[in-house]
Image (cartoon, rainbow, N blue to C red; front, side, top):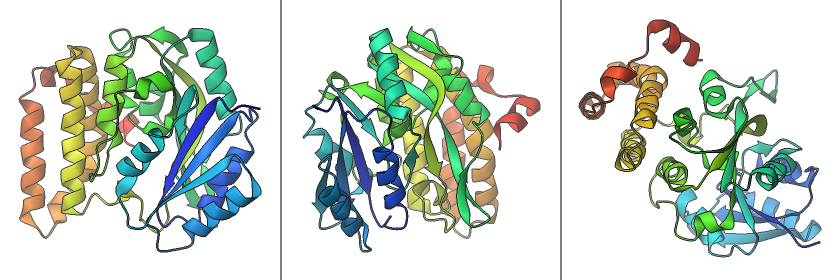
Length: 312
């Protein structure tokens, strides 16, 4: 059976979680996939886990970096080897739901769109096991109700779904598109380019991914107290807004600012208030000034009720 989908699965030092990611691929109800497993300079047994997967299942292929190069570079190297009609992404510490690929493919077959974006949930350690939570309001706003063949002008809230791994794309989307390298949060600008450059895309409320929030705090998204990570994060947020603005999507810019004000800034302000480096607060204040300078800012500020609903 020739594969239809290439799943790109990068991982660095995720040996404790990679078996679950591999198993979630093998559990797919649609088996027409291949997976490129990229060991990005791991110092633990991630490479061995990936090698064992490939030894036992010919649908897996392993690529390795001697030194860590980051998610962007790992994904780009895999994209250069793409030879299937569709491509998706799964981080090596996350898990697909069993019908993810089936649902993605069925949706794109029906719509003919360039890509489909699904819902996702956080997975947290509870009573000794990682358990998925509920779909959060900001995810639901981007992915529900089901919409096929839409544009960003028709559904500006879709811009709030900025993760690479909730989407399945036609390979043609990636002919000229690659991830930024040597930075964190490399998927935010890419996601906005996907939305603005697509002929049409789909959003669906089905949960495709369990996004693991690691109990040890080592996920990239849990490192925002570090100044270099903050710099990458704020640059990615502004970079995504720049893409939307340049394409003339004012309503999507407004939606992104509203989400940032409700979801991102409260926690960042809390970190800044107790941070020992004054440069942290200065960076955040500069970012907030950039937001306030945008013409969409006045229409974006959420009321307290909306902010409370978003801030889970």
